[in-house]
Image (tube, rainbow, N blue to C red):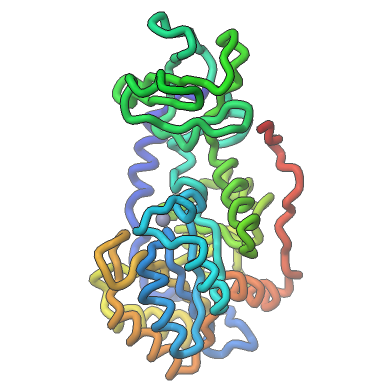
Length: 354
Ligand SMILES: [Zn+2]
């Protein structure tokens, strides 16, 4: 198993910082021919319930649509901070795009990257109870523990582990993982796996698709997007929103590194409008904003309903096309002369084993 690297951790810490607020690029534009005014997209990350409650009605009033990036495990978690499936379906029915924002919202440096790195080894039987096993676990975060493809449930205390099979306990400070597996036997035959980023990409797509959503866009959690995971995402998605500094213009469009501007709680409507003026109106570019919660205190830097309403009104009044990420990416590809891309959804380079 890959040891965690402190260089990797440092790189990750740097990536936590939000994308810098940059002025429009000075280079001459390659504008979208049919779109003299460019395009605008609003994206809402994490599937916070306030997006359903407040952003949907604001945009609906002006027949505007947006993209919601949902964390598959939280959509089905019964946690009221997050939208449930019925609410997400209402968004989709109103024309919104539902995108995947991963399975558990982790970074690929915190968990195994590929299915091939998922097996957890080195198990020993615990002396106090022979149905329990333990091993050293070397990644920072656990994004699911599986045996024979079936998830184990996390317990808060080591003492709770004996209750019944199908449980795990992670003693994070000493990096010790304890399991009560579904199926016992020799420690070397347990086939216990720790969820990888490849699983995050694939399973979130599968869960959302099985719920009836049409998924083509991946929105990278924390806008963290290393090149290897960008390549892996091509097996499952047609495009990905990231924190990369591409300019979202036809001539240089990279569908797997679609750039977004972070909308911070304190950003005025005027400052967001200025970005649209400089990038979309003046250069025919595609401006995508990244919001989280709207109108209450839940979620990262929630944006006020009033400011969102003012932004929505200004965009409508200016007649700037408002598109989902999926629509915008199609238009950009056409403008660049490339055929619309369909995600391969074929056998990935690293095969899935459970
Ligand atoms: Zn997020």
